Amino acid sequence: MSALSASREPAIFGWDVGGAHVKVSRVDASGAVADIAQWACPLWQGLEHLHRAIDAVAARWPDALHACSRHAVTMTGEMVDLFADREHGVRAIVDALAARIGSATVFFAGASGWLDAAYSVTQWRAVASANWLATAQYIATRMRSCVLIDIGSTTTDIVPVVAGRVVARGANDAARLTTGELAYHGVVRTPLCGIAHRIAFRGETTGVMNEWFATSADVYRLTGELWSPHDQHASADNGPKTVAASCARLARMIGRDAADAPEHEWREFAHAWRDAQLQAIGASFAQVYEAHPSLQGAPIVGAGCGRFLAASLARANALDYVDFGTLTRTAASAPDHAAEWIATCAPSVAVGLLMANGLEERRASTRAA
Image 1: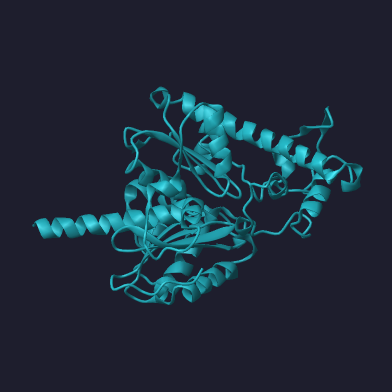
Image 2: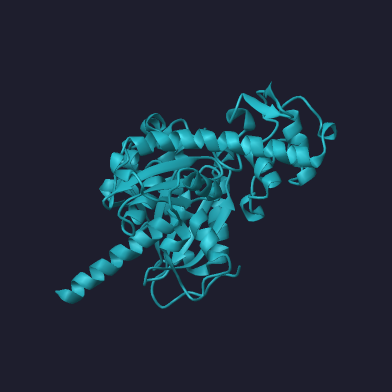
């Protein structure tokens, strides 16, 4: 996809800086999504990966570093073990972005609104890992009641929206892990030994090796549900991302070799892992759903590269399914697969649109005055 030329209005960029990816969306002044992109960013290996992602953003959108461009940022990358703690992580990410994309950059802080770099450091708890809230707040402007299920490469966010308000019981990762609103399940990077300790193969239940032999990407390559542009991280053994190599990695999880069974049996085995992960995510969904009786019958809104599992959960629970990509407007110049990338990069789209909508409201207020 080629970069879009700068419009007459100042460009608005929404950023979601994660520990594994940087996702950036370009939003025009009317609140339409013009372009979206994602870059692998293994932040745990060093801040240079974030700087490379910023370089890639500037290469795609040359006006991204112009003084007149506006940037809205949310993050989860402060959690990586590169940093001594989350406070230092927020500070490092804020400093890196403010230095490269401008001191006028603002950071999403939930109820605290948009904070500049200095306040983001002092109010780091409000800024840390708030990307799920940005997505849910945007959805709450479009839907009265629903459950957001954003399944990415690494994690799953399950966020209730009731009567146009986000009603999550947890405000941070620690609390959300307790309430079920955060589940550490994704469709690319999750080690299979973290999904199940026992699994069915050839009609028997077998133990699973607690080794990083395979990841969830191997499962969804074999089920055919992982879109290759979303498969951006190395495999567990740094080997090829082919069907044959994924079969071999799955086989190792139960002490076997790929030659021990034909390919169709390894595909069946992959579906057993899919079922196990869906069951685990479903248990968290049930915990959230049951905590809010007024959500009964409300639809599921799916986001993230693994939202095909959210659609499966909707079918299993006889609920309507709404794709996040249908809740936004796209510019006429938007690239191919725009809806796919909008849903995949939902938090970056959300912060961009929340900023654009806020600017439009201020303009309307000024005109009315």
